Amino acid sequence: MIDIDEFYEVLNEVCEELPDGMFEGLHQGVILEEAEKISPHARNDDLVIMGEYHRGTYGNRITIYYGSFVKSYSWAGREYIKDRLREVVRHEFRHHLENLSGMYGADSLEHEDKVELKKYLDRE
Image (tube, rainbow, N blue to C red; front, side, top):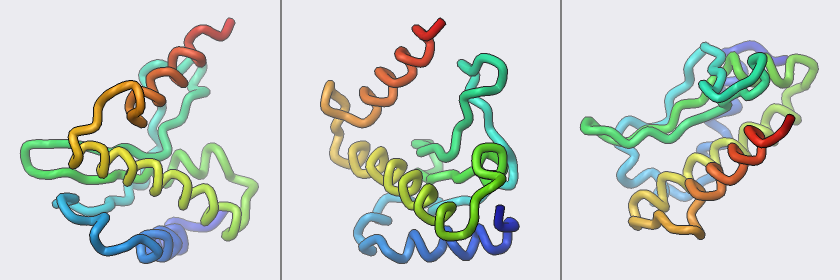
């Protein structure tokens, strides 16, 4: 696994792949936290949160959790981490764009995330 400094560089590379317009309304930007974040719904710490989109009074932001990547991909090299990070960043940006557009129905990513969580919770 790459260290946090290299992870930050990779995060910047992934964000630079996105068009500038996608950052509109993302007042607090993309934040990297060193912490690992476990879902409050997790059983035995097995549901890790890699990133989150936050809507707030003081602006919107995306938080990426380095510790969650370490927990999930401790064996992985830079390119694998970059691919997974790209997936997470784009997932969170989809939440951002849907929020800006007011999209909250059955077609929204928020709905898809709830369906996936239900599948997880329904497992024995």
